Length: 202
Image (cartoon, rainbow, N blue to C red; front, side):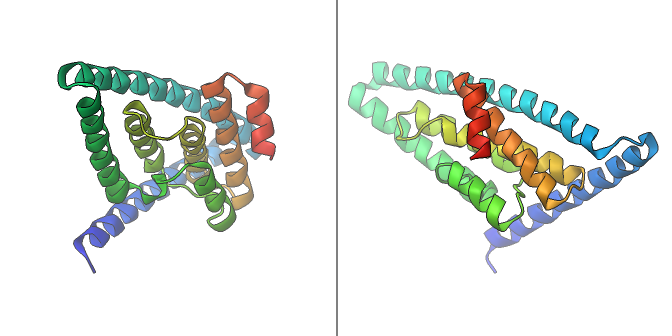
């Protein structure tokens, strides 16, 4: 077993332990407060919408900052060398982050969410959202061939999945919250709430 695999397994087990502790605490709180599951679902959807909207704002802000840095490097080193250097550095950083912390963050984003829905019951690790925002900002901001919809869909879906796991919901409920996150992602990044809802239904 390689050192990388050992580190990954250790961080995964720590992640599971944290989720289990949160789940135990929240389950006890729900029993004490006697909140119906429907109320918790609606409240979770609101939190997912707000969180995904904030994630979209951070994502777009990072894009602007990295794009500004890329233009600055072009002014210092020349159009070709500056652009190629920034893309090379971004590629190294993105490759390291994805390989080290969240292999699910590679790719477009939407197919990975669909895979999680179909194979893993909608379960997506929380760290995927952070890695996806950083990796996609670096890729797009330096001129890489990528779009905004995939990353923000995966970010919202990861947030929805995390809340579902923390509350200990069934796979069906987790999938519902993942769809809420995907809809919030489309709505927030393109200012298109109806399109986001239709996307989630599809």
